[in-house]
Image (cartoon, one colour):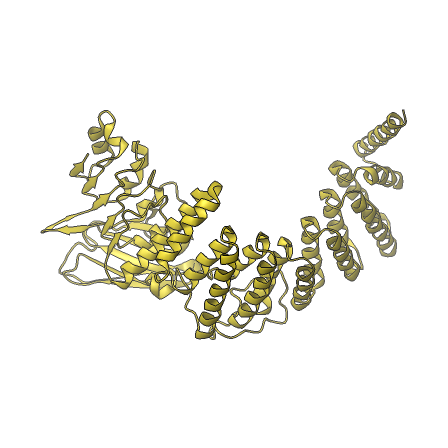
Length: 539
């Protein structure tokens, strides 16, 4: 009966609030009614909205000192609501709204509240979000916030939020100076945790390696520190640039590769994405008007301007040449590894030995195995290739539920290694057969490839990004063909799986022997319709 009585009181108060709101009544009684209801149920979003409407009305009829007292009382009321539910979306959102409108906010009090709440639950993401807002509004120094993460991590290594927050603060306090990559740069005086720079300087990175190593040696099975370590080993974001310009006299087209997917805006000429579904693509094609560059007796100089970034790239098509290009290679750009100083190499080698020692004690620890792989790739991806493959196999055995993820990650690394080998050899042949590939990536790096061999892998379909391979050729005698091998044991079974090949303009020969699609009715006729440029089809 007591419960029914409380419910009747609650429903009556709720209905009274709804009636007042419908009638446009924004008085002190409505404020008291909403407070009564929200004290017992702080997750009633409609009442928080009504309460804000009341407060906005009171701002228009009270002086500033009275408004200050009203909002201070509101903050005290909100603290009581947070005691009922520390993770109440409505309460935290309303507190942020109130703090932003307070005539004379007490940010020190708000930071203290965050400290208390995070001491009770250091993974309260509502409180973390609110703290970031307070820090932004009050201009708390970055160093103070970094020291705060030090305290939390010191008391509890298993703190995802603290590690993550630390990753956003370090590039601000210890940015890598552009001209001196081994030294720490000084952040501008106005830097706050909401401002983003690029990478952390090497000196500070070495200290972070030591900190996080202490964490995962203390508890090897706690993944929060391993995630942070993986971030430390991550590559810097590539500079936005035109990475390659390719010109074909025969096709009378220009292909441009960017360092990231872009939405090319046509100015003067028509640019097309390599695939109709890609509004943002790293590779764009421009078909020139007939006769523009077809005369082999003439030399042509082309310039591609990227107005958004105020950059350009020149490419000269010389007399008698059928094609030309200008590009930065993956080795020049250090796409798949960072150029390490002697000091950093020494530290990472030491850490690799340490993690290997941990792996001897914890041979089935997946985080340990994955970190060994990442360290090896940071140091020498080609030199450690064989060991990396062995560790991937162990990972699949000890963490079978994620074996598909490890297969894809291993495929990615193997493709990166093959691109590096191809470019060190200065050839345009990409051969990666019999590597159990389950996915294809970095296809924008294969724009100039003339021969590709993907035989004996485990590819189930070709990604639409395959259309980025615009000039695949292989010289056979005096003829030019594209020679494309598909895994004999793959699952290529429908025409849709081969649709990306329709965007390869020089495709002349296709070998599909051993694929399920060869068993379908009228396969040859349907493939001829899909790929009219193919003159040599092997089924």
